[in-house]
Amino acid sequence: MTELRRASADQAAFRDELVVRGLLIASGAPGLYGWGATFEDVRIRVDELVTTAAQADAPEAMRFPPLLPRRQLESIGYLHSFPHLAGTVFSFEGGEAEALLQGERAARHEDWSEFQQMTELALLPAACYPVYPAVAARGPLPPGGIVVDAGGAWVFRHEPSEDPARLQAFHQREIVCLGAPEDVREWRDGWCERGLALLRALGLNAERDRATDPFFGRVGRMLAANQRNQELKLELLVQIAGDEPTALASFNYHQEHFAGTYGLTLADGAMAHTACLGFGQERIVLALLRTHGLEPAAWPAEVRRELWGA
Ligand code: ZN
Image (cartoon, rainbow, N blue to C red; front, top):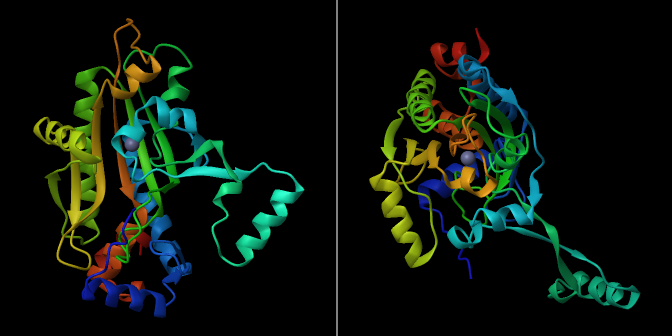
């Protein structure tokens, strides 16, 4: 049973203030918010800064829906590594009698799950996942590999929390590099620097750190130790509300993980490597609001210049 993460007093106060100001719109479910025009304006402008920073890579744009075939999650081992975060789409496939019972139980807010069957779809947990099979389906990579901009996709993580910086549904701006091992690692490391410069130019006190994914269980602890030792995951952390800094961006070197799953090869037939980066868009907006105040019009001139150009 996934437990609700409680907010610290500081996090709860920050969240309440965001809701009162209309920056966030509470849904009634933890970690699920809408937001108002001011929040959205900042989110879009941060996204544009990432687009500008990515121009040097001449990325190919791809866009995907916030759902993916369940089979892809199965193939990449997501249910071994992150069973606690996955969301699967279920739907009704019964007849009239079942529909009636389901409707009655639902109206009373009772358990109607027995009338629901698993569909072939799952919620997208990382914006880069659809990129690997899409590129692999074309055949070997062109010489030099490619960079794909997967845009700012909606992703889902089942981790209900009262901390406004830990959402169950949020936008992850992902860019993916697919190519030879040394090129991919160099791209990943270089982007970590670019990301750090981008956040610091926004007046955020960002720090880089080695990190691990929230792998599940005892085997997960081994995977996490390996990930840390090999520096496969780097994060950029900023203090928002609470005592611990929050990761606003991550830079992940997957080695052969996705390439092996989908048969992604280089032009010479050798196995490709992949890396991805993800900017948590809502977290960056929250960090800006926390750092510079809840009125973007009153933010420091140099931060406003970065975002609005004036
Ligand atoms: Zn990714």
